[in-house]
Structures are given as C-alpha cells and as structure tokens.
Length: 290
Image (tube, rainbow, N blue to C red; front, top):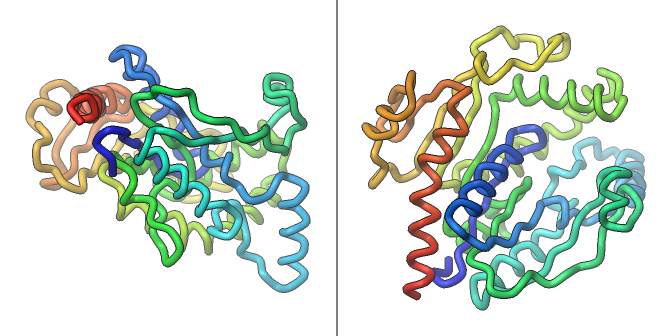
C-alpha cells in the first residue's frame, strides 16, 4: 500500500458486473475531480487470440482440459504486480489494451484479438484503478492485495453468472449453448482455484443473488433483471461503516450479518455511490497529506 499513490482494485469474473462498478467509480472520479489512470485485466493476458488458441490446442492434446483465461499461467501476473508496486512507489507505470472487436480495432489501430503497444501512464494522476479477473491474487509467486489500498470483489451466484455468460456468448458472439457449456466446464477448475480465493482478500464484496428460479441456467430464456435480484454487500472490516445511515438512505435494505447489508438489486448503484465516495475522498485526502 502507498498513502501517496493509492490503488483501487476491482476483481470479478466475466459478466459479474465489474464494468458497472467501473462506471460508478468513473462518476465518482468526475464528480470529485479525481484524476485516475485505469488498467484492464485483459491487458495482462499472456497470449493474443491466435496464440491462446494454439496453447489451448496444445494443452488439449496433452490431456489438460482446465486451461483458460482464468488460469494463473494464462496471465502476466508478475507484470501486473510490478505495475502495482511501481505505481505505489512513484505513481508511474504502463499498460496496454487487448482489442476485442472491429470497433475497438478502429479506435486503437489494430486487429481484433491483438494487443496495443505498452504505453506509460499519464503523469500526475491521483490514483490507479484496476478492473479485471486477477486484482487480488495471492499465491506463491505474487501478492497483489498488499499493494492495493481498496480491494473490491464483484461476483454473482454461480448460476446467475452462467446465465449471463450463456446469453452474452450466444447473442453477441454467435456461440451455441453446447460451445458455451464446454467453456464453462473448462473454466471451472481455475474458477475454483484462481478466482474464488481472491474474494477472501477483498475489503468489500458485492454478490448479486436472483430471487427468481435459476435452477437450470442452460435453458433460461432471459437474464434476471436488477429488480429480480438482491445484492449482498459484505465488509471485511465493518468498523467505521455507518450501517444505520446506509439503511436510512437505501429503501428496502436490511442487515443480514454484523458485517453484511442486503440491498434491492435496483439500488446497487446508489449503494456503491454511498459506500465508495467517502472511501475515495479518504484515499485522496491521505495522499495529499503524504
């Protein structure tokens, strides 16, 4: 951690809602006049699209059916740790973009499935914001949590996560249900061993829970809406969190445990605004004093 150069890390698997959290933070940064530099987890994938396919084929041939982008070895986590460490020390670092689509290719001047060149951060930033799959990895090789000042986990219950992935991959990428099912099965080992342990390291977790039947996600016709969901917000250390204030401001919220508040799904953005704004203000205030 660095008082002078704070880092916010948001971790969640694909479709979990990390982009929603980023949008919320962008609003807070704009409103509070905070100059943030953002990095995406995709930037630290080890392979471009063609190389990843070749690596998958090689591992399949060798009998490994568990390799995916969730896996530690599919990502440059040492490089990500170096960026966290360097930013905490002097406010500097570099990142790149993974180009997902033709539209992004036009914007960044590259082909889909490739990376842009590495680029130095803009100088004089107030904080670093990470959003991706591996922002709180702690294993024998890296320890990312020790460098981040605020660590947030975003994770739906697993059936809801599968529904979101199935619908996105079928509707936006043209995959069949069977193809998406194969990807889910391939990712499960890494999801259990690489993704889930990170949510023990985070300071605050947001878990979306549907209140409609999701018992068979592979036949669900639509994704449960926000109004058909609750969000469980868990604080690793609830000391200093004004739960009565949050309950008074968020209609329909209630405490489920001493460190957890449950809010209606449609109030998730409001809850994030109320929770994150003072935390960002505190980080920036401490950085200025440092």
